[in-house]
Amino acid sequence: MAQRVSIGIFDSGAGGLGVLFECLRLSHGVRYFYLADEAHAPYGSRTEQEIASYVREGLQIFGVLGVDAAVLACNTATAACVEEMRRAFPFPVVGTEPAVRLAERAGCKHALVLVTPRTAQCARFRALLAREKERFTVFSPPRLASAVERFVTEGEPLSLSCHLPRGAFGGVVLGCTHYTLVKDEIAAFYSSPVFDGNPGTARRVLSLAGRDGQPLAGISDHQKGGLTTNKRSAQECECATKNEVIFLNSPKLYNKLHNEHMFSTRFPPKNVIFSQMSENFFDFSKKKWS
Ligand code: DGL
View 1 (tube, rainbow, N blue to C red):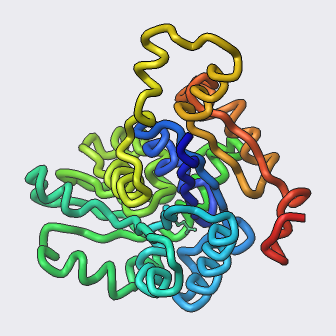
View 2 (cartoon, rainbow, N blue to C red):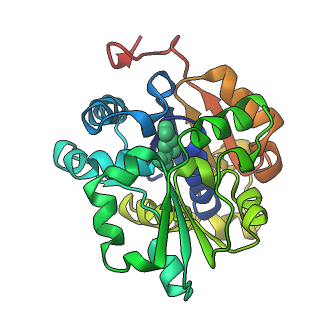
């Protein structure tokens, strides 16, 4: 049987779950490692140098785990250091960028682009908007990412009117993965379409990791024909068709997410195997298995 493809997903917190959900929707038999750098969040108020050093640490862990590709599921980290990380690591590093092109293609005349304060200042983001600046209004809510993190992980009420400007916009570009977790709420707040880059990011990383989203050859035929004759082959099929998600840190936090919030409603357990790899198993300081 072909070896399981593995992908590392990195964010400052829960924002990267939006990218993970898209990947899970599009893939079979892929192992995902999810790493949230909660100790240094929010990245939106960090310098580019700080962010680059934290991201490097995270990707080093993915390197030890032998991933086939990694995603910076964080617009801020992408804006600050994706090029540097691509040069530093042997595996492909996919970035996450505000979906301004999607808004353009949808014919959006005047869109609001929501990004973190750091992203707004990065040269990479400025270059992205340079071509059609007058069509976009950029706004950086200083505390929205942290508020979304608490909303998602602790159930703290979220009031968008405390963070977002009022106004009429033809569309809203969600330029921070945390904002994509409250996509429906933001769409309702502005009564306008929202654009998020998560599906494109997921397609990109899966193709770079060598998975086009199809089950491994022969597996689906095998199951369809009812030829699974013993437990062992059934287990092998399951392993090849189910995705697996391993949270590398925050076991409590992601248990909560899994059980109470998103995973249980979006992905029935039959499609995804969830597990945790807490500090008991992986020594983050030494970057090795203990
Ligand atoms: N989720 C991250 C992003 O996409 C940043 C949130 C933070 O400020 O840590 O930009």
